[in-house]
Length: 167
Length: 280
Image 1 (tube, rainbow over the protein chains, first blue to last red):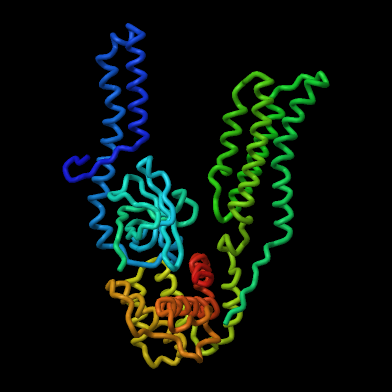
Image 2 (cartoon, chains in turn purple, brown; image 1 turned 180 degrees about the vertical axis):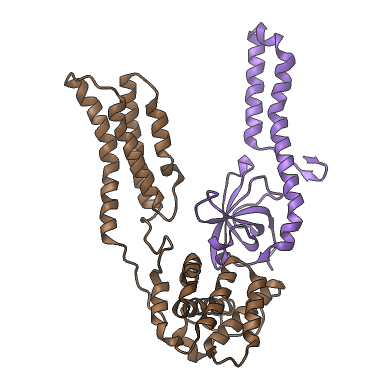
């Protein structure tokens, strides 16, 4: 679904919640006249269960789209093993193979990307533009952060992850 | 070449950590045991008293998680859960079941911590002193840089730290300044070669150029000073990047051995240097 130039994705969890409460409301309104009398505000509230996640996704993706050109200009291409604690806050760019994917269904995907020099965790706080899967060769642009914000090993806060074709 | 040597942790600290590991199930199950025993003996007891065993055990577990280089956020937050679970007034039998279940989960988390999050941090892994293969390499090359001045070593430290921090533009400028000094007797040939290799790599990176067909390498005479063995020439990619790793580690060794004032900064970058040592 596109809003303006932004491809908006809604997570399967948000859809499941909407479906669940829709069915719940339907059943409740069949059996309870009190619920039927409140439908005028219950139905809009029900649709907010979809509208709010869509809005949040749109806002985060449009923000990422705005900052991506700056990261593309500033990020230096490096090998994964060069990423270390001293680089926290620096924009980086690297290529590698996706070894693992987690939490894609929550629109908060986390990837394990590896190249010949090492591997690193790549976290994204919104949905990615492309459907990245295990064994895809990707280019990652992001910022080095600590895993738990103030402590932990360095990971990459991903701004963009896109598939590249390797010849 | 550098011989790989193991890092031996402090034995006394090891013993105290072991006692703490035993204390976690001891206090948590001990509290539950007291909660069962006292009613059987007819002694009235506020459930908060045996519950303190679980709270203490959580604190020990959180400490064991904190001292590890890789942090387990679940174990770190157990004291908060223990206070939430046991501070509110509940029925005695419910509290007893909760304590037993909590003691079981703490014990499982302890096992998980030991096997998934490695051993407790040593002074080296916590960045307070050199350790591991890096320490061995630096000690083996200590006497190899006799003629290098502290100023030259300081400049080596600056380039290493800037490289580690990703300040590649500054590192390029610094290495250019050094190489323009050219015939300065302070710089021995391997060090000059190291600066040249680093500058070449930085320039290629900065301009996003492809991997060159011909590139700078260390000579055979430099081999005793290198941290990593040279790679067979048929793997050009590895040979190219191993030369950079060796150049950076050579700078680290020169800086550590000849410029004491920079050691604090080099310790901050120790994890990066260890990664260079141990990676392929």
